[in-house]
Image (spheres, rainbow, N blue to C red):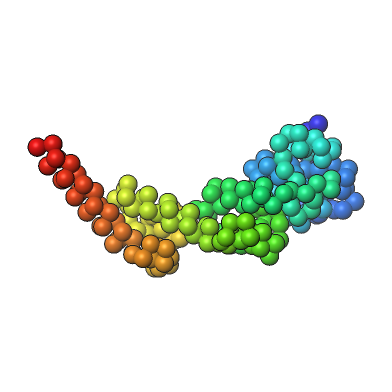
Length: 198
């Protein structure tokens, strides 16, 4: 059964108090993960916390066990954890993300997260993040007239020089070259389409 958090429980969570382990479990709505009070993961937003008396109740409510503290003795399978990591990156790619921030958000250590993700996906979490950012940048470059600076800011790369360097690393062209080339291809395709109808 879930219930609202008390001041005493909140204090136990923010202090990582082991004395409260197995007395209750807390779940975080935004990550869909539940933990022991002693979990060393980043302190969640108070408004996103739900309390459960038993680990089984949290599981039945659709929460997954934390990879770091293994509440109630449950382990999150690596496949599910990788899915959680991917989801976290997709939902937060516009912010300043580091391996440490991703690990904290996904309740694991940076080293373990990096190793498991790379073994399952064939790329590191940071490479996955950068690819997501570049995919979104390509979409913005094709569908908007926004400046390169603005697009970089929207995808979490506010430094235009860094954005252009990373974009070129993945696409072999700068954002400007990409936009110009793709728009030229569209104009040529439209021209051919109209000539075929004539």
